[in-house]
Amino acid sequence: MLYIILGILFFGLLIAVHEWGHFITAKKLDVQVNEFSIGMGPAIWSRQKGETKYSLRALPIGGYCAMEGEDGDDGTSNPRSFAAKALWKKLIILAAGSFMNLVAGFLIVVLLYAGAGAYVTPTIAALAEGCPAAGVLEPGDRILSIDGHRVAVYFDVSGALSAGGDEKTFVVKRDGQKLTLADVSLPLKEYTENGQTVKRYGLTFTREEATPLGVLAQGAGTCDYFARAVWQGLSMLVRGQVGLTDMSGPVGIVSYMSEAGSQGPTVLGGIQNVLYIVALIAVNLAIMNMLPIPGLDGGRFFLLIAGELFYRITQRRLDPKYEAYLNAAFLVLLMAFMAVVTFSDVWKLVK
Image 1 (cartoon, rainbow, N blue to C red):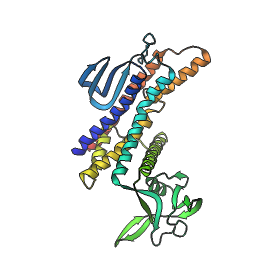
Image 2 (image 1 turned 90 degrees about the vertical axis):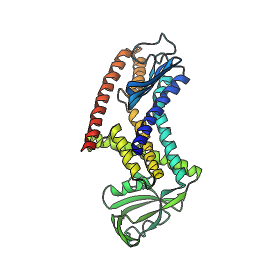
Image 3 (image 1 turned 120 degrees about the vertical axis):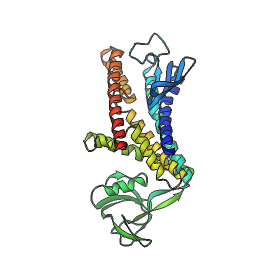
Image 4 (image 1 turned 180 degrees about the vertical axis):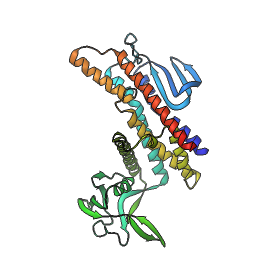
């Protein structure tokens, strides 16, 4: 139950961070904010402070920062409306939510690495006895890529090794030089460790003590790893390699957080597991929200640029109400899709 509560709180926090990005940039750029809401659905708490109403709503599946002049009306009669502001100000406000999610993900990962005091790097420490790659790969090799897949952090290694066949092409840094090692045989095989037989690739990697610069580099590399995982998932979705049953909404995400937390050796370890997933979700939200799909920040970002290009070519402005209709229609579709995914999550839990 502890990790379910933490999952709900952290998920809500990511939404709050995202909407706060919109809110703070809108305020800084002198845009009138009518309401700042965390959650969707009926309000369970609200307070009016100045021109802005602050509210907390029942469903932790979203939130919004309602600005004057963004509902399809021209809005330019109010100099503090969103519609009246320069294009660059609008784009900054729209991108700020995703940017804050990226910052949140990065800070969480940095915190986890700093707290651990050390981290594993993609530098080979040793090769197991009988490893087919012995003599080709050497201790001290810093793996840069495997079969063209960039290795930024240790987590990249296992995914790259498990993809494709047993013959790999490695690019490593050895003694300050970059080397390409083709047709390296590295199958998953059984090795004896501490009297037990385990399946592994036969590589052991170095563990480095955390330093301020090292922690920052590891944080950036891990966020890069998260981002590439998100793009890979999107690519698989487009190609039809994953379906609805492979997707998760808020219910599935919280359930997954709870499961990961329960697998921690201690309560602190469980919280660290949950925070790692929160960082992944933060990066995921940042990328997904900037996709050029109407109803999302990325869709509005794209439509603003397209509208500006249309004006420069034709000297005519597009009627903002059509953009509002398009965003509203896609938002309804997205909410319906979210409802279906949530139902799927609940059904999986019931089963």
